[in-house]
Image (tube, rainbow, N blue to C red):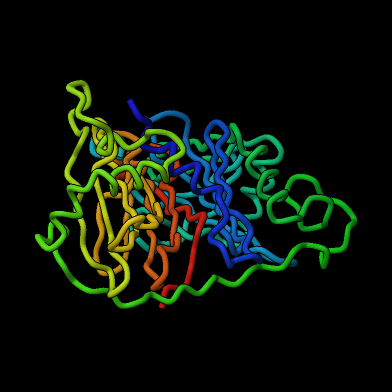
Length: 349
């Protein structure tokens, strides 16, 4: 069975697009109960969780790229129905020391940490841990520090902070000015598209063309799209019909089912010309939808949909440009994932 997250997580580490030569590739790294996602602007978001599925407590530490950037912190506690619900004010506690009340939630279950609380959390993570949230009734939700050191070091490495005073894990005397500057979001200009149905009868002859199928298969490194394979009783979506619609006066968009799993699907999309040899441009084999010039992929990490990865590609008049990639972090019971952790961001206009 195909892993629905594998293609997405691999894509998270690829460069944004040709032409974005100054943009670093994104990073996604997980170690035990911690993950970090760094995007192409050099902003990094490190998320730590409770151990196991019996608690939804999580912290998010965000730092923009460039010298002299502070780290901001947010704490999330969103218990699901069968878990203890918080009673009264929530306090941050580290090694049994009270660090004060968490600020009122800015969104359901999410609290912004003060600068002092964030600093205390960071200090605890690089030393002895012992971070927890405690409610007015004395119930305690511990935060795991397992994996934090590796994740914070990976963040420092990605942002070029190792050996500088601003590093979290490996401080040094190197000038803070040596830290690489943040990178602006790449601008992608979305081109207008024509609106035709994906099964436009005007393209029925082209959709049945063996030459087109062969051209599409030739764009793949391996025969990874089941819908393009010859009929096979063991592959229910083999030899699936091609669907074709017009993008503009020069380009067509072809899609076909590529894979099916327990709770995820992936369709292949190609940009082609109307006539042989079609010059197909493969976009993805993991999409779930197309509309208004954008191809979308979205996949659950498991059936609960408490960790979801999303990607989009936007038509610029010549090709589909990868314009966003977001992970939902670790699966901890919160619908959709506790945090959005982007590894690719753009300004689509």
